Image (cartoon, rainbow, N blue to C red; front, side, top):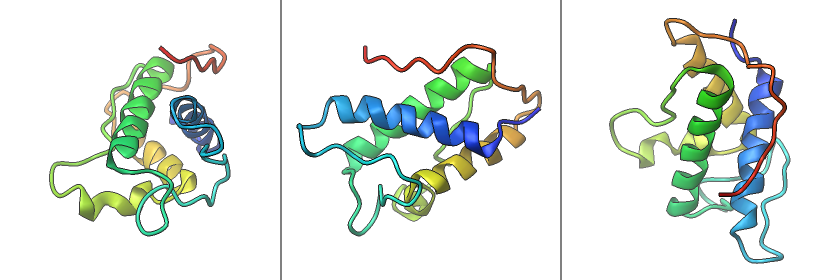
Length: 116
């Protein structure tokens, strides 16, 4: 089975919580589908985007047993569109899991977000 969009969005929001825990108070990223994460008026700088991407990849592996890569080989700048919003990231997660040869559903663990 593949990861469905709503569950993928939960993963993105959970990693945003982790990113927010290392941001200055008052500079947290709101958890909304349409919040701009990357690009013009984006909430994250390049280090924040990499942190977000690696956190999502790790969490997806924990939940599904499948390793995915959100970035393809090539120019990072040209791939920013998929990092634009939590919604576009969730769509990318679903797409990447569909490409896995043995895609599995989420394990039955609860989403427990912790820092460290």
